[in-house]
Image 1 (cartoon, rainbow, N blue to C red):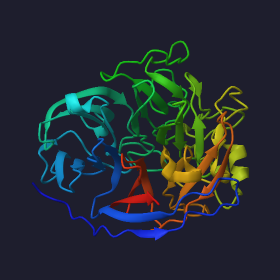
Image 2 (image 1 turned 90 degrees about the horizontal axis):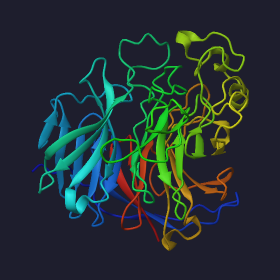
Image 3 (image 1 turned 45 degrees about the vertical axis):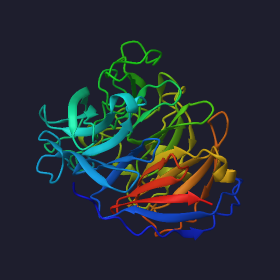
Length: 420
């Protein structure tokens, strides 16, 4: 089996960030490269022995065993060296193979789940695939598409902002509390989608292993029963708070206000980019998420007043974010709560990664922040990690079974940040 190139495992140690923000001081960190020369690694999921499944957006699903050996499991059409391929899976723009999650009963059923774009139905959808692997974890023994109707932004769209595959969502995680699978979906630049009761873009789904609605989702009457929360723009991270297991999303903002939000069953995140909502007028292609009055050098707070990420004027009961990135949009992606005494003052705190490219005067993100979120989930203090590695566009943050934080970057690498 083909083996990917592994970087030399030479740790580099830096001090944790001293804080003046009220967040307790964290540990020293060492940085160890794990894999490089990957093609847009998007997500990771672990077994208890350190085996790591990972996705590459335009290639497919692979596994790195605890001994460092790598096997390519499921590839897209024309992908080379994979034990299995699927001609319907594709990548385009922000879309492709995204989130991966390990079944909590993996030791008995050898099952993982991935979120991927599929062309089985024109003009394409996003799907959640349940994959039972063979005994050697080198190929797929059985594939079942348990969710088949997550919207995808097609190439034929004449929308003036963003290309095909935009606002694609794609993070999937099993809750350690209730054991159900949570799925984040994006609004696909369609103004009708986030508040729609039947279209499942701009949502967080909560489902069982067969893709059916989990009990207690609490969505309003008339909503698809799989919906746990709605009114989202493009949530790229979901994680669960230790102790309470309350889910939190990390969500990209519209040229302002990336948001971290505590979710409640049936909650509305307050994103509604339709024209003629909240007093706004017409917008290009009936999508006000980038309305012209947000363009130029206008201060982010002014832009937010025109197009709020969480519109509490229109939706007074919307879920308020714990934190809004100081009113900036910098591509907030992966998020995970750190757990264990090795994290010292950061134990129980939320780590969020950024990969923003800095458009329309917004500073580039490319960092990891630590958030100390209040018990009620309505406020947070922030400090920024002094990274023991070059700044990068972070795509995923996952705590491994060894207690370290594993990070995937758009620069084609997966690395380990170990607290010391």
